[in-house]
Length: 437
Image 1: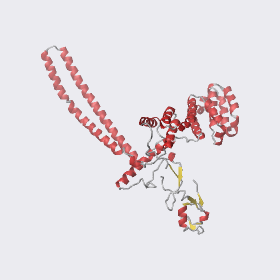
Image 2: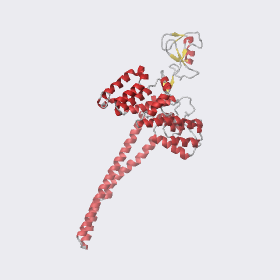
Image 3: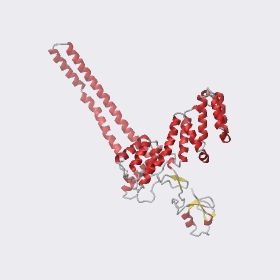
Image 4: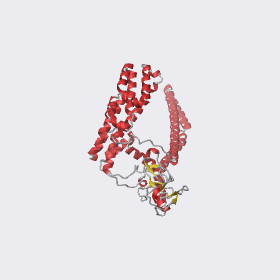
């Protein structure tokens, strides 16, 4: 997948969210598990970049607004007529109670009958009800037209390794803090080794829960225990934790305790973070009134949120996991690419052509940058995507072609110079070097 451009183009080719998978599990659990996944934690940010999809969604919204408007109008008209009829009946009852004469009762009832005929409730309601029925009948047709429920033709049947899929699902539940659900899945899928991912995530969520309660001790202990690993990764999370703790002490316990804390923990960071430490030392002058100082921004709740995000990112990095759940990313990428695949499926079906056996899709499937992980190179001469057998090669002039294109241009002669197709330079095959992205 990916556009055919002469540039470093990344792709989420591996992000296929719509494979055909058969789970040897209870249907009830699978239904519940996926409901929990989609209801409690939507996938990574969806950004619909397809203009046609936006137009279709606007069409649905407009149709829904029309139905809502007609329904409100019909309901309002109905309530108005019911109120008018009720008022006439109550008036007639009141007149009959005030006049005991039977003859007058008949006259009152006759007058009531005449007034109800004049009101003609059915005639008044017929128009608005008819308009509502028309709008309601059109709305399902629009939904049926735009939302094709059969997506089975828009993906290829892939023989997934069930063991790997179960590991991914279990890891996702633990990553999202759904530990009971993860344990249930591990037990029913009979994948006990998948529970190995639970312990580190359990520790991470305990730290994050303590941070939500403004308790940084568990986070500081974790950072201290992993100090060397964090330093090798170039992480500054430990300094950020000490900074936040210093601010909390200064705000809640006073200048003296904050100063003692700084003397105890800041010296190891002085070389790299001197400017930051100097700023914190200046905060000591505003003890008790930090909220009205030039450093009041340090009290903002956003620092806690950013600190929790940074800690999560660094924690996942140390345990060899990505910050975003692979399952969430895969499903999000699949959903974003699905409209293009559905359109391709419809076109190919109309032309009676088979696309599932193609090695490469005839149209690009563009994904947002958060789904782009693998660099791709497309040769500007042959328009072929680089592979291990046909890797990108750097010419001595600085341009890049695929190996097979160089072979053709040199007429399969490694000593024969050839002209670069993009500049006047003469290039020898022996001077070309393979590129690694």
